[in-house]
Image (cartoon, rainbow, N blue to C red):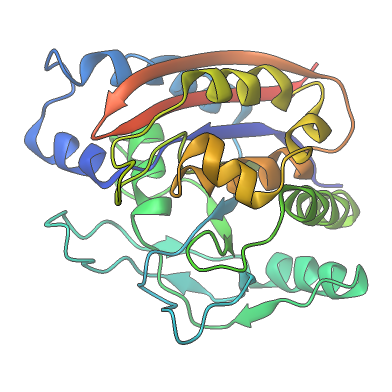
Length: 280
């Protein structure tokens, strides 16, 4: 049977990719953020996942405002990264796990989620940067991926409650998979930030701490707010916390231990965080 080894959560700010490209990891501005990753890498080396199920949001590489699925699951054999216009390097392609993707898709449809199935899909910085942070020296990625995209861009946006339910349905699919893969769940984005309007530069460490303190033991606490309230509390781009909530749901209801946590503010007008949870 497949085993879920735990979850890795991190921010995916494009500027992180720029810092990596410039070699700024030990720069005074960036070091507090990058200092959070040696422990993540040690954990990944210990648990040795074969597959990563990645909850993230697309930034226009696959979907735009004229066609924005609420939930989309990749079922491709491979996933390429392309230039998004940030001036970042084009990162390595990812190998897919189509059989597991289809198993997840069937479980989600069986759980009455209306999803978009993507037999072709690109991955943007929301996937590539977390992988560059976790496996910086890899000649090729050590895991296959199942990418799951959540709309955090255009209203109506799914509620925290719905995203937690989505993650729990994905978790049921992973636990019923008959393969022997070791699976890591990844949630990317945020935390609090707003990039436009009168509140540009807004961050909310109190809300971020609330999310971090409740994610492991009481994820339902994060569903008490509507998505409009989350946008008020975390900023319009801070609703990327939905990716974290869904990823947490995939871990199920088992007791969890916090392996490592690193919170730093700001990075490019974003409250950045890295967190690892594993079964206790």
